[in-house]
Structure formats: C-alpha cells, structure tokens
Image (cartoon, rainbow, N blue to C red; front, side, top):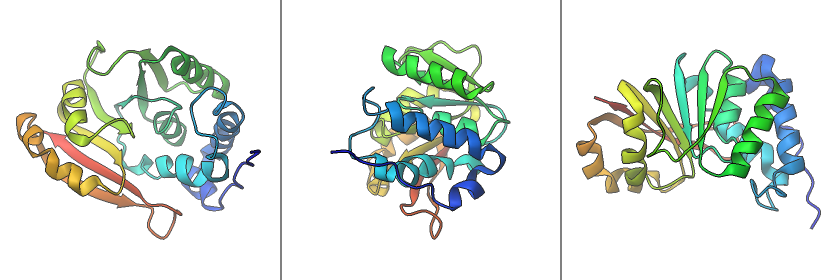
Length: 209
C-alpha cells in the first residue's frame, strides 16, 4: 500500500517556532527512510506529524536547560524531536541497536544539531561522564521496569519524564514498590496537548529524592 505523508498540521509551526524548518527536514527524512530502516510501521505516514512528531514536541516545555537522556531513542522519538525543539538543552540519545544508532548519527549530522550526542548502549550498561538532569523515554517498557533502568542515570533532584499510553494510571499503581525503592517523589501524570493535538500526550513525571 502506498501511503502518503500527512500534511503538516498548522499547529506545528507554533510548537516548533524558529525550529520549524529543522522539524520539517527531520519529518521528511523519517518519512523517506523510516519504514525501510524499520523505524516506523508501514501505516504511520498518514499520521506521522500528529501521532509522532507533535506528540513528542509538545513535551518540550517540560525540559530545563541541562543534560537530558533519551533511553531507547530508536527513530529519535522523542529525543531528536526534543533536541530540535529545544536547542538550549543538551541531549544524550541512548540506543543499543547499531542500525538505529547509525540513523540517529546521520540525522544529527544532516540536521546540523550541535546539542546531541548518540551513545550505543543499553540503559543499564551505559557509563556517563556526569549524571543527567532529566531522562525521557517513549514506548520502551512499563513504568515499574523503566524505574531501575533510568533512575541510576539521574542526579539527585533529577526528573523522569516518560511518555506513556492510556494505561499510565495503572502503570503508576503497579510501580508502587519501585517508586519507594528508588526514592521517587511527586509522581504525577500529565496530559499534554488537549485541544491542540489530535491525540493527547501522557507523561509520567517524577523526581529523585
């Protein structure tokens, strides 16, 4: 089936501001190569902007200047999208699969992103020069599984900002033991993009105490 790329929603320019041209270039690259490289499914082109690019970009205001890690970066969702939207923030994209690392590095170079470093590693094995201020992830695993993988990467007072699906409230409940063990406080579920995006973005946010 020959799917066509979704027309850019009008809100994209508002969300990305001065960075919209870089966002357009990344979206075009992902549309052209994503399925072939196994980064997106064959049915994703008609909803690439609304379901993927903008759903990630709407998180950009949650980031603070500093060092942000994206665990299991894959196609660069949300890591590359956030790096485009927030050139004032430094990113480490953590991805174990070689071909995905190659894609991420290609995009960093092609888009001229100076605020991104790509590391080939699993989250539980990576050696960082400094602890992270924030960690994000999208569609990697359940919250209770992500906690022991991500909290050790954060500095004291650092934040988890994890993209989640409709099942997020149940994931928070199921993670009660891990939340206590890893000293997470202020665990909350944020719903972003209501009335702005076609699909809202759900984010679990928590702080390491």
